[in-house]
Length: 199
Image 1 (cartoon, rainbow, N blue to C red):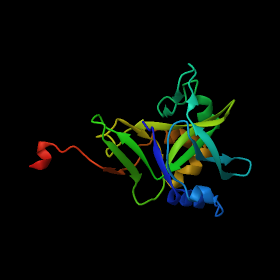
Image 2 (image 1 turned 45 degrees about the vertical axis):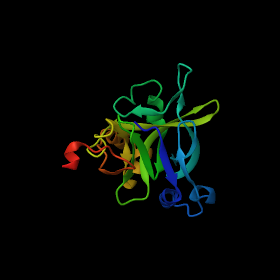
Image 3 (image 1 turned 45 degrees about the horizontal axis):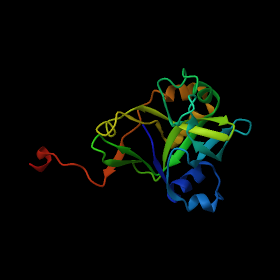
């Protein structure tokens, strides 16, 4: 599950390096805000004709086919089968980036998860065009060991060197659907201590 993430200028600067765009807009480099469903956010896409990556702004969440709410995540295990997602997976793969994402446990404690040794965290996504413009969803996968104590799902986190494969290589993208993301750094403003912790 991924329902909110944070974007800072440091993550944007790292995205600019990947895009080979030193002039990435000042607005993006100065950004410091949470991204929520329904917000517009920067998305990394690929131009196959030029074999190059570029930045676009899209809305987070596909309008629900039932007319209520937004579909904000797609399961990696079923994304190639679900009618709402399969064309996006086949033709319109994207990468979202942020500094960290949030998740809440059953006790309603908020945790942040970030990539170790990196100021940017890259997440696999897909996009589609709707009447009001392009929208994206973030792919999720079963939780790894660092995520499992908080939630049983997590974003499909990509390494920097996997970004081009995810966007341009359909076969490799299919393989990445089954990857287990590496460990993440977890932090929480407050964690409930158990009696065992205190002994």
